[in-house]
Amino acid sequence: MNGCRELERLLAAGRESDFAAHRASCTSCAEIAREMERFAETAVGLRWPTPSGSLKQSLYAIPSKTVPCEGAAELLARAAETELAPSEVTRLEGHLSRCGGCREAARVLDVARELLPPEPAPWLSPRLAASRPRAARRSSAWSWLLGPRAAIAIAYAAALAVMVLGLNPADLARKAGTARLEQTARSGIQTARSALVDQFGAFQERTFRTLEALKGRVGGYGRAALSNALALVMRTESAPRPSRPRNESGSGAWKPNPIEIWTWRADGSPGGAS
Amino acid sequence: MPDEKDLVERCRKGDDEAWRQMVDHLGQRVYSVAYHFTLKREDAEELSQEIFLKIFENLHRYDGSYPLLAWVVSLARNLCIDRYRRRKRERSFRFVSDEAVAPLLKSADDPAAEAVRRERTKLLFWALGEIPEDLAEILVLRDLDGLAYEEIGKALDLPDGTVKSRLFRARAEVARKVRERHEGRAPGVLTSLAIAAVGFV
Picture 1 (tube, rainbow over the protein chains, first blue to last red):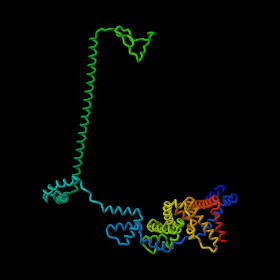
Picture 2: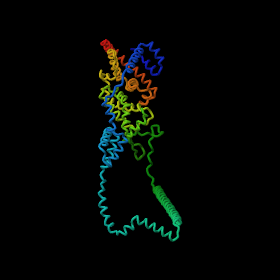
Picture 3: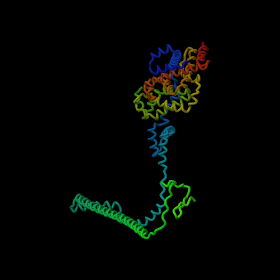
Picture 4: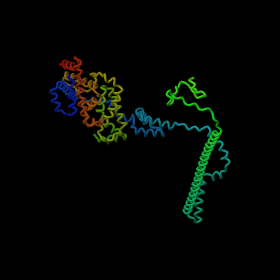
């Protein structure tokens, strides 16, 4: 066996004429081709296995064992209202035992029926109890007058009265609309004016604070200048300041050793390291 | 055979006679697919029932746009694959018995020829268990279950060209497996074929 895979390649590509030529020259592929032919004969010679009579009877009876998913939905809906016939229960249970989706649907419907009423918050009942006497005090006529039905009735009665007096409700509504517009415009102007006043007040406040700060600074500088002038006037002659140490050649600054600390005597000569 | 879509519609409406027609029409093919997959009568019967239950419960999904057989085979195949995954280990070391292939063999006058065919059939199923699953299933559907290329293509959702090329590869792989087995083990399968032939002479 030389592992030649040309046969597969040619057959897969549908090049059967090339395959015949290759087969004549390749012993490995020729052998495989012979095996293929033998197995093709074998496969063709096989018959289909026959289902038994009992299996067929069982297959015929499938509609009595289960329902399609759409039928299951109908049965589930009916089961919530009425009792199903025993055959329907059998079919539904048969289906639910096999179909995860419908089983889940059935559980959800069960949950909907079994839900408890929600628990009220602990503060709710005292509040309700506290509101009861006030309601009880209210007479039945007053409670009717304050109810929504009374509001509707009064509105209808008013509209009727207006019409009886010969007024056109549409005109009244238009007038009311104009009045509302005017009122709206007025309140808008009022709002804008108060906003402007606020803005101006804020600006004034900022300016005042800035001026105060400047005044403080100017005062500070003035005091400092006065103090310096007095110091100059009052200053007396003192010993000459010691000159800075120079290097050995006497030119340029001397770089002190950062570790050593030098002191100067009052006569200006370096005192040496301490 | 009545119009398939009409038959499905009648089944959906609860027509028992239509369902019987459906079973008569497809029972043999479905059982054949199940048997070729399991090679065991009891398992094939159980699997066939599962397949028909699935068909009945999913009738609303068949839209009639392609042959009913292809739709049924695609349902059957999915169930077979589920079962195959559960029993993969068992299947990969499957021993193909005489009893397993007996229902597939036509009775012949010549016992020697029958013995050779039986051995070769066993070898065929052994090799099908050895080659990749996607190749094996196409060979079974075409050569054993007798489906047309188009039906296989619809059932497996593959273009015709792919079906053909996979079928050729499957046949070549089966042949190669048999040869490897023969060359790997000297007193192997082909020898047993020869013994079977000689024993009946």
